[in-house]
Figure 1 (tube, rainbow, N blue to C red):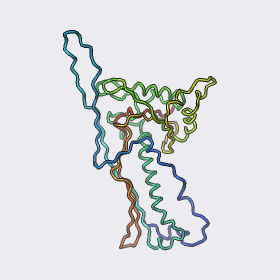
Figure 2: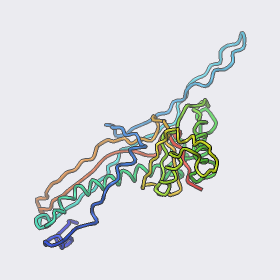
Figure 3: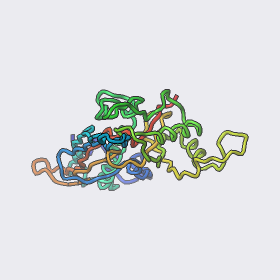
Figure 4: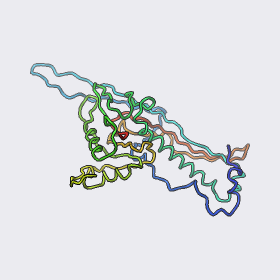
Length: 301
C-alpha cells in the first residue's frame, strides 16, 4: 500500500515546530564485534571439519609403530538469504511534503536493515541453548554439556547448571575453555577474547573486567581477569537479560557472516501509478557455527 497524502496529512501544511519519532541516535553495529564477516560469491557455503592425529603411542622394542589416521569431522552449510523491504509513495505525497520527510525514507530503511542484521546475528546466541531448528552440525544446541568428539568422547561449552554472571562464574568459565580438547582428545590452546552481555549486565561486566581488585571481596585479592584484556561487548539485541557469553579466538568454524550481496538501495517510478518506490536489500548467511569451541555461554541461573 502506497504512502499517500491521507497517511501523512499533517506534513502537507507549514507550521509544525518539530517532527519526532522517526530518527534517534543509533548504536554502532555490535554484531560485527563478535562475528567474522566474509564476502562470498557462492550460493552454498560449506565448512568441513577434519580431525588432527591422535597423540603418539609408545613403541615397544621390536614392535611396529602404531598406525593411525585422520577422520572427516562435522560439516556446516550456509545458504545466503535475501532480507529487505520496499516503500511506495504516491507522487502527490512527494510533491506536497512540506518537511522533506519523504527524502529521509532511505535513511530510515538503512536503519531498519541494521536492526535486521543485529537481530539475525545475535539470535545465534539467543537460540544457542535450544536444539531442534537451531542445532549445530553435531545435532546438539550450540551450548551443550555433551558436544561429541569425532574420535569419541564429549566436551562442554556451558556450565552444568546455568549461573549468573559473577567474577567467580567467569573465572570458572575461563578454566572450562582452557580445558577444551580437539576431536582426537588432545588439549587445545584456545583463549577467551570477548564477553558478550545484555544491557542489564552492562555495569556488572565493566566492574569485573576493569576493577583492579576482586569484585565484592573485602580482601585485597588482585583481579587477574582485569589483566586478561577481555573486551566487554554490551548489546541490546540479547533477549535473555541473565545470559552471558564468552567469544574465543577460534576463527575457522567460528561465528561467521557470509555476505553474498552487500546492502543495495534503489529508487524507481511506476509508470502506471506514478508512485515512487524505494527498495533496500542485502543477501547474507549466518547461523549456528560449525565449531562450538568458538564460544562459551550461560543462560543465567
